[in-house]
Image (cartoon, rainbow, N blue to C red):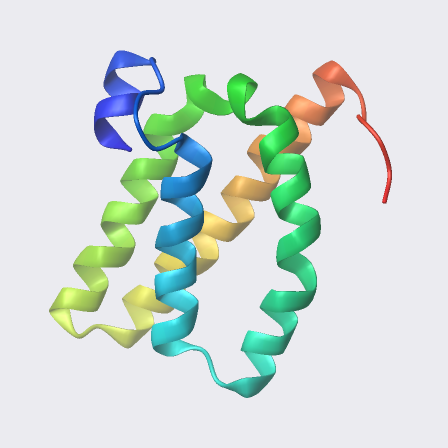
Length: 111
């Protein structure tokens, strides 16, 4: 994702696939049954929007990759509080990034 963010040219695996794989790894490694169920309920809707707007989000990809790096650093450091904060920041900022794109381009379908 970092290379795609720097070059702003999606190559090989799509931005979406890389981001989705990252988040699936995080959820599968650390979520309990309740959070896994919530993630499974929310993820399909988020995926639809992410796929619809992915080409518009590529310009903000550096922010997302920096947030992912913070998640990985906290995990490797064994810092549960830092990990929680980094995960929360990525989720909230991702929602804000998506909301801005939806505001600009309008909603593209409803499910």
